[in-house]
Image (cartoon, rainbow over all chains, first blue to last red):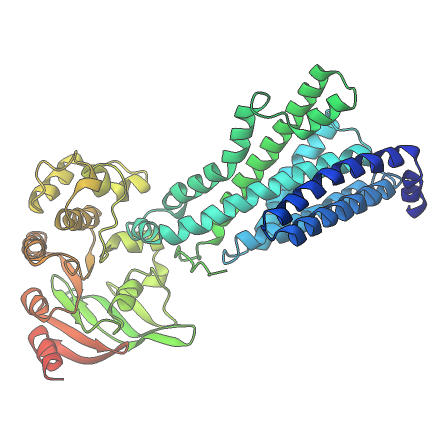
Length: 266
Length: 230
């Protein structure tokens, strides 16, 4: 696996890439100099972030280079590892909510997993590590973001609307009906970024996958179609994740005696 | 002859994170009486009230409704039978009628509009049904909250300082309409208050709480006087 990764480093195109990095670095140095000249005091932070970003992205390139050589079944493990990481990050947004880790893991796994499996079966994602890992990670990362937004909003809603929820329960309302409004608000809020992205797709921004494909010489119409497929996958995975999180959380925040649990400060 | 004790608690206790909010409280609320729970802020009155409709879970002890342990009654049924008027009205968006009918709406049950209008009339809210609930005064909102609870036709009503956040005039109006409606519907109520005059006017019997415990019980006048002398 290491030899495969090193093989990519020795490819002549890497030298070409390094030259391009050099040109980009000149521009970055210009910004650092301007910062120094204007006395902004940001030189150390800017140059540190620039160098760090370079090291991180090259390291990821090497890791992916190594991974491309492993059998396709490894994709599942790699993607599950990514779901684990996504769960770990997302749960922090919902800290204080009961069972937030299990709910996040289950929702992201089902939301992103269902989309990746369906689209692989449909042929939109090639059943190779080269395709499954990057596209899968894109779907998982977006499911994570949407899950975080849903948890963050739900936590606020449950705290802010505690009185309203308890009045509803005290009127003999079923928890499902009493929680409908805060759960709906959290799902809606979590999907705003992806809905806005879909609305602005193409005329406000050209997303990375399409831009990359066009730069790589791909047919622009096919690039647009594939980009839309990616957006649809993000939308589907995010929607499923958010809905599942709200459904599972709606049960967890109530006790068996239909009392609203205390939501921690986390 | 049926047991006149409609709602009773036996050694009811609730402890949260090592802090005892309600300690060993035993009370008997008789049918058609207003039972006063009197005491200063932080004495455990509201915590006790929240145990009576099981919005919170007791750590130990029991609550009986009509002689039945309330843990054997489904929570939704229990809360319909033991209604709760919170300190803040907490109305939801929409009209007054929608707020009053919130209980049956949540339960997906039909709404008896005739009864709804009758209740609004009794609480001095004639003609308010279609008004926007967000535009009501504090006193009006509190009366809507009372109507919302009564519309569920409860056996017992828990009143948590229902007029404490209102100005004197609005509080007096709420109190007098409440007294009328309790009388008209022969209601049983548990009234939590820190106001000695209100306790004397509305209740016959009651307890005085301090530090989560009952420190005195008897006629509401005695309970209040004991407080005044301490």
